[in-house]
Structures are given as C-alpha cells and as structure tokens.
Length: 221
Ligand SMILES: [Zn+2]
Image (cartoon, rainbow, N blue to C red):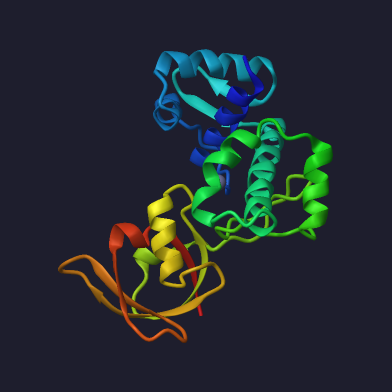
C-alpha cells in the first residue's frame, strides 16, 4: 500500500470525525464516498490501518483515528499547509492554484526540506486560505468556526476560506475577501437565500449565496 494512499485515508477520517473528537465512529461508507472508492476498497484499507495501529476499527460500525493515527494525520496536514504557504509566499503562485500541487507534494517532501521551508517562512501559523498549520508535535491552533451561512447582519472577521475551488478563490481575491479581512453583513434575504456584505474600506456591496457563504469561516467582531 503506497504511503500516499494511507495518508489520504488518515486525512479523510480526520476530516470526517471532526477536530473535536467525541469518540463517535465514522461510518466506512462516508470514508469511501469522500475518497471516491467503493465501500469494499475502504474496508480493506481499514483492516490495513488497524493492523498498522493507526485506527480503531469496528467491523460494520465504523472507524476512528487513535492517537498514533491522529498524529500521522496532523503530520500530513502540516506538510500540505506549509507547502501551500511556501508556494504562495515564496514562489508567488496564486492562492487559487496551489491546492492540487500540495496534494501531491505533501506525500513526497522530506522532513529536512519541510523544516527549511518552515524556517524561511518564519514558522507561519496559518496557510494562505486561513487554515491553521499543525505544529511539529501535531498541535492545532484556534480556528474560525462560525460559517458565514449561519450569520445574520453584523461585523465579522474572515478567518478561513474553502481552498479547493480555484474559481471561487479567484472571485474572493477579486473582491478583497481574504483571511484577516473585516466586513459587514448588511442584509440577509431568506426568501432568495442571499447575503449582502460589504468589505471594510471597500465601496460596493456584494451578493453572496448561502451555499457559497458556507465556505467562509468567520468570527463575529
Ligand atoms: Zn490545500
């Protein structure tokens, strides 16, 4: 089993069980769906991961990462997010274009190279999309946790954006919507499912659909 496959499963299980692990098992069907494989393939992999001591797997009920598995998932996430930060900050690649390359590089980059990137970037805490970068010991910092889709009128700080949709990222950049930016929700129109927002210091008001707002994580100001 190539290590990249193992690592992608660990990341998927971590994403599905949520960062505040409540001990619930993740159904194998959900893992299979997320990775676009058959349930049979996912089940074979669960047995493999359990033998490697990375997950607790209960046949026909589900799976969760144990402590070893969680640390391994944090290691992949750290590599992914540091690579993205390096591609944007040092190599000046557009933030909409880095996710796919990071998906590949996260599995192959050496610890030595990663450490050097981390130093050159002066130990960043967040990637270009606002996602927290796990520390070298797997510790994960505070995250923006409120989805803009659930917010009413008021002032907000944009913390984090969805990273895997280049078109959406380009639209955000064109409208100065980047992590760290403050903006106001002026109106929420429940009838048509839109939010009217205005970026601080920007003139015009923007219309955002509620499904798009789901991909912006904010904190209320
Ligand atoms: Zn990414």
